[in-house]
Image: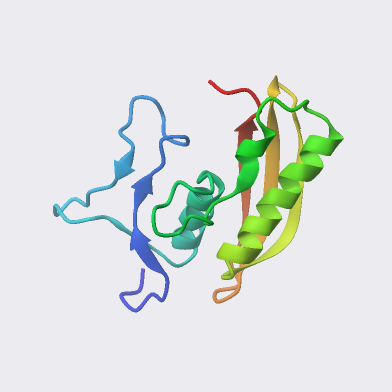
Length: 142
């Protein structure tokens, strides 16, 4: 990891993606400081934070976030999948200009009919690194 990394951020263990037995929140490095993530990992973390933030949650940026919460209690069908794709694309194009969306798709989770799976293939513009993010979103609160 280069000390001159252009993209650096504090490392967060997101509660939606951490095992239940591991703490979520700001991660602490072995030396006691804040653990950092750089480059492509920083961008991936930013995407996860964006997609799990409901617009209105951030005090100084009320428009920041992704409107996936509007899908709560909607049927798990092609219309809802299309809306999920629209909301994710809209959020990424507005707030995460460091990436190029290569492919974005959504569909029913085969094991849980109350969830949709959103698949994002993207490229980080600066490094040309490619990544795939599989993001499960519950249509039923709880």
